[in-house]
Figure 1 (cartoon, rainbow, N blue to C red):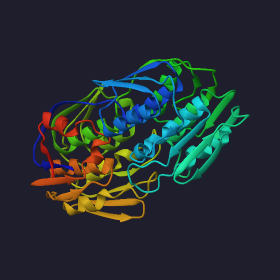
Figure 2 (tube, rainbow, N blue to C red; figure 1 turned 45 degrees about the vertical axis):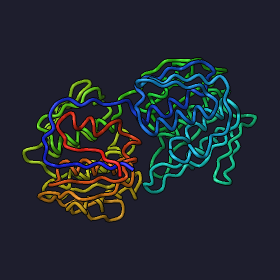
Figure 3 (tube, one colour; figure 1 turned 90 degrees about the vertical axis):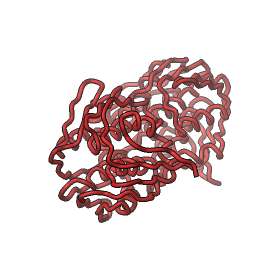
Figure 4 (tube, helix red, strand yellow; figure 1 turned 60 degrees about the vertical axis):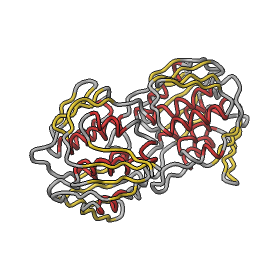
Length: 420
């Protein structure tokens, strides 16, 4: 099992490049199951999650080739059962359910695994497919979905307790593109990754309007054809590197990103006194002369993203005064707080709210990653800590960051990956 040893105190300077979006690539890869034709997906990041998705596609009968960030899929014949041994490793694997239902009329998918960050139910996925007209049974740790007569021509509400669901919206959109009639999704997720999937589906011949808004209208078509697509930049990876620049940057430029997808957390950064320069495809940031705390509340897009909450918690740990972060999407998503406190941070949790009292410095310590974004926060904290920080369970970070250690080393960070 790998761990990352991070030595704090280095200045980061230079250019760092963003990979393609994990949260776009996974459902787009799943969408290739909707056609018999060859599909080509470019800028697919080399991550454990995308590797699992490629394995799932192959297990479902697709022919898959992968090289240098490009994945070619030809799913001439597919089976309807996704294997437990692969699905259990990744929560996003549930997004094969919609394409399988649309393509074969049935889907048998094991309940998925992935990050343990509190309650992440699949209820909205199932509720949406039921409203579409599918028959659903959950038993023995698996989800059985079957198409029924009269599916389609439905208006579906995807609003949930904590907002909509990105993967749930993706799943329903993929199920609806080959379903007769018109499907209207109300309360759809507005994230750029949903819009990116819609762009790919439309390139395949789907008829979709309103992706990126709360209301998506889909007119079913008889079949889809192959298409080529380039995945959008990963806004969360870019944001993580931007926070690295705020923590330890002399002048760090994050390139090949889309600042328009990061408006909310860039505003939080500038409100806290950090100098930020933005172009159409880059963000330059450095340490602040007089940083100040913030008051952040996570919200569905275009609000402050829950996937940047842990990184800002690490940033504010070393900022004078008191900062407050309230997590409304996954209220239990603060497992990084005790680990940051091991490094000398002063973070108090009150329900879904973290109260952070800035300290003069953090001290390196052995810490344990609990999920993808928590692991990134611990690496960031290690950049500013005195001494060496050992981030254990590094497999979490490899789920969502392509060569994060190599990229940071290239701009001056001191860290090394070791195997125990």
